[in-house]
Amino acid sequence: MEQWIPYLPNWLLLFCRITAFMLAAPVFSTRGLPPTWKIGVAAMIAFITFPAAGLNNPTAIDGLFIVSIIREVLVGLLLGFTAYMFFTAVQIAGSFIDIQMGLGIANVIDPMTGAQSPLIGNFKFILAMLLFLTFNGHHYMIEGLIKSYEWMPLSNGLFAAIQNGTVHEFLLRSFASVFSLALQMSTPLVVALFLTDIGLGILSKTAPQFNIFVVGVPIKILIGFLLLVLVLPGFVFLFQDLFSSLFQSLDQLVKLIGQASK
Image (cartoon, rainbow, N blue to C red; front, side, top):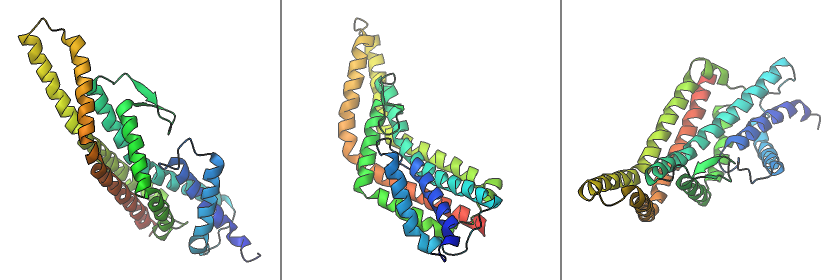
């Protein structure tokens, strides 16, 4: 035991990064999961990672140890936020569709986050979460978190990467990629509903006796749901591309911070 005591601060640093990741990453940050479960899983992963990443150099508990804790918490939050940002593409796409269908004002409470979200976006988000669990994406995220210590050890250069603007540039590019994916996911329904609006506009000019404001909204909702049923099988391939982009972005972030450490 005396040989392990000097390395106890290393385990605490491991625990800080993993716990911060659990608080921000999709699936693990769900409000339905008890906090004790999250802490227990984080402690277990820290124990598994400790022999490979925590026995390199003992860390002294001094003023710099507080800085190391802040750095590890930021690393975990950054990794989790990057992963969760790609899941928000589903809700953004749902918002675009809801606005065109006329459901933009009808929001529901998302059980995952406790915030209000659009109807179609919430449906797509739940579907994406189920497919993510089906593809064992949560296992790959934990594996990637453990392997991140190969590129980002406890003495990583996160602050240097933030100072030279590498992290900011990465987050901007990731946000642009997320917005592009959201547009691609919503384009078929948005374009079809836009053409429906054009058809209703032509109908209102040719037959003014029809009350388009009364007839148009149910027609757009009906067409929107019919198109959603038709394109639903294709969501599997869209979500596969989404998850692939997610893991590629996590890999790029880990390597960017790892290169700043050298």
